[in-house]
Amino acid sequence: MPLSVGLETPLQVRALDGVGGLARLKPIWNRLADELPLQRWEWADAWWQRYGTTRRLFTLVITESDPDDVLGLVPLCVERHWLAGRVLRPLGTGEAGTDHAAILALPGWERPVAEAAALWLAAQSHRRWDRLQLARFETRLIANYWFLHTLEQVGLRVERGQSQLRWRIALTPTWNTFLQWLPKTTRSHLREVETRWLLTGRARLTPSYGTEFDEATVALLHAGPYELRGVARNATNASIRERDFTADLARRMNQLRQLRLWSLEADGQAVGAWCGFGRGETLYAYLSSVAECAAAPAWRTVLLAHALRQAIEQGYQYVDLGYLPESPALAWRAEPQTVCDVDVIPARGPAQWRHRAQRAWHRIKQWRLPR
Figure 1 (cartoon, one colour):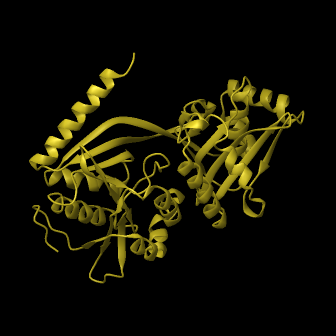
Figure 2 (cartoon, one colour):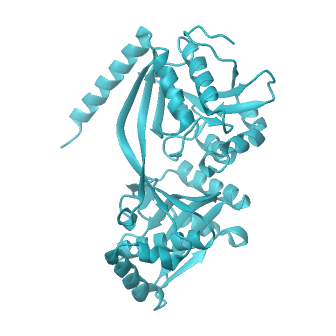
């Protein structure tokens, strides 16, 4: 269908509104997500049930001539803001979102799908949306790159924020090999922690997934200061919706055999938990929590080292750590993965005015904060 933005695409794009359309897409959605557990339909549906009340679903479906032959999906939602207007965001963003937002496409169709979605959004920018916000967008992915490139090519304003780093560890075939791969100081620290806590029986790690799934372990993820996608927070800041979302998501991923969850006890007390999702060659860290005390760094090391060891023994090739800025993983030769926040603003005057006004308002709020 030709679009009036200076380019054409042979693919068809349609927008689905409402949850009914979301449910019907489950089989093809999971096929497109492939080995990304944080992009599966189960994730999006769990998120929508908790956070979709103030938003409108806006999922783009990209096909060829047959409407049932889906080549790609762009899961979006619309939220109205008093100043920014109608803001488009990827489904599963914000308080309990995913850092793996992507244009979903069949292998080999990444560029055509991304271009078709971008052209459709550009053509609809005069009446359907005022701003597109892509938080922690991984621009190196093929589909994501061509999506932004096409939006720029047809005249939309694309602003890339400051780059952020996620971290990924390449694993070795055995745990002993992995230990030898680490710096000497890190190996010494691990041995000290193991000798002091694990070998003496003062600390004990317990799996909680598969047939041993335990709701109490999920609750531990919000029981102490925790790291959500690497952002250190206090458990009291976790909303009820966030806790409910985590519990629902854990149950769903456990049914798919993709949940990896451990609890940690020390001196007879529950002191922490680690949660990740495994699919294909990568184990994705999601949420970890440790009690606030002098031994917290040691417990964090125990949790992460155990997760890495289990990942190796279960045949994973990588562990995606997210941000985890306080973990020792940054000293373990982790590979950086660059992401950034992206804002896309239509070329029309009202949208540009809204964008400038919101930036000015943000600067005023920053100026008024106590120093």
